[in-house]
Image (tube, rainbow, N blue to C red):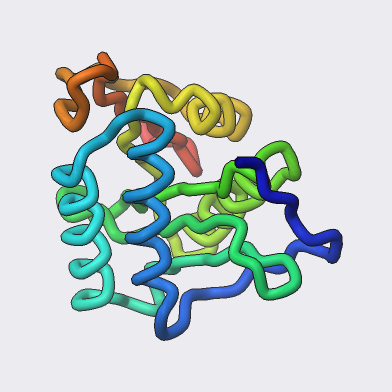
Length: 175
């Protein structure tokens, strides 16, 4: 079933109460329908979101929601990397199927990169699955480079996805 997206302008805002539940629900539904990912994937998303709320640092982290006429179209987060204080980590990009092709995903990625630069990070990293080819195209268009190929994703019996780590340097390293 295809749903039409309202015709007004897309707006972007930071998260507010209730948004995190929507992010979890939509990741569970969309990725189950499109990639046969199971509830273990949804549990991982729940842990990521709980950690975000428990440890949220407004100066160094953000979660954005894209909307049109009060209809949520997508989301993305940028958080501190737990292993590298100079790195921001993009998490949980999702664009509703009916909103794909409208520029929502590329705008959300650009917002993360711009925020990371303004917050003083030196690089942005992200982990994604090889089956998420639309997201990978967005990351490549934004200048991200593949730096590591990992093992199987393991959340699906029918999808053969692998973990991929991507990185974007925000400034030149000193030599």
